Amino acid sequence: VGMWLCSYAVGGFEARNTLTLWRGSPLVGFKHDGVIYDGGSIEQEDGQWRFRFSLPSEPVLYRPCVGMLACFVRTEDTMLHGVWRSGQVWRWTDTRLRLHPSAILKTQHGWLLAARELRLVDVKDADKYPGVVYTASVTLWSVDGNRLKKVLTLPGGEDCAYASLAAGGKGTILVSYYRSDTAPAPCAEVWVADVRVE
Image (cartoon, rainbow, N blue to C red):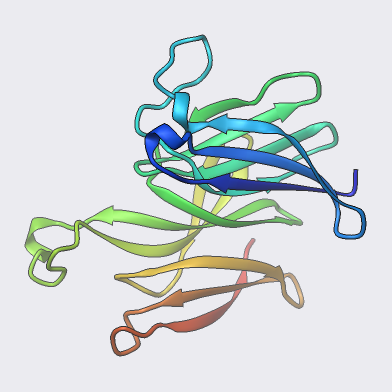
């Protein structure tokens, strides 16, 4: 097989936002392996998981074990988690977490997910965030099947996101992400954190 990739196409609701799976390699090319989530038909009631107004984007694909693929997906309101086993269809569940996933890494302790967590702005903070209904932080989550547990919230506020993960030295994880609260508008800074997860 070589590699698996997941891409998304976004348009209006009628344009059928979709997640597409690809397989192959950079040397021989990739072939279309089917649509794994069709956001344009989520209002149908055909026995499949359907989430109203949950158009998918920014999929994070990973392989929990041989014969299985899994995917975290950003939507407008919540993060979805999909699982596929050989010979079966993709099954999607709602994590009920307001997260935008960006990277996942297998560590000696299990899977670690990086995501932007959105929090609604409290009315008492409305003056600090005019015209904004939420503030964000980059968070790390341990993943065990469909169960997620927050491990760490990284420094940052207002607008920060798109964390990437890499193995560091001596059992640490390197996390890079942008944050705009430390730079003059409209700029942002890229931060790197060296995190030890136990």
